[in-house]
Image (tube, rainbow, N blue to C red; front, top):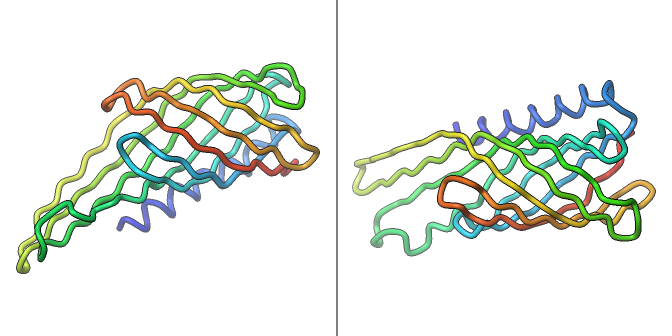
Length: 171
């Protein structure tokens, strides 16, 4: 089931990539890697599209790789997962060699934890909404744009998330 949820998230981002060209000629798709102060390393995909030259929307799907080493006594199997689907609005600075940007967004998260010992299994999952503020730097090129970003989650413990990726121009 966990893999189906991640597959669904990436399909949602892919559909956004298909619909987005009707909004503007500026469309980028990016693989990305992030690190969270509470969730470890995450991998994901982002689609961005411009409403104007300085205002962009984005959709993002993230899967955090949970570190379960040492989480339980030997003999106890631990399975943990955490996923996010995010949407947001970013405002770009002047288009130069380094282009700053900032914005706000929100999203939906799903987390699950399962423990198994001697055939007995206990599991719990949780869903909810996230809000965040972010800022970053882009290095615009003709067909691709590397970026680095810092995000502050406003709820769920106020974690910091930082990461980056390379956005490839689709259209």
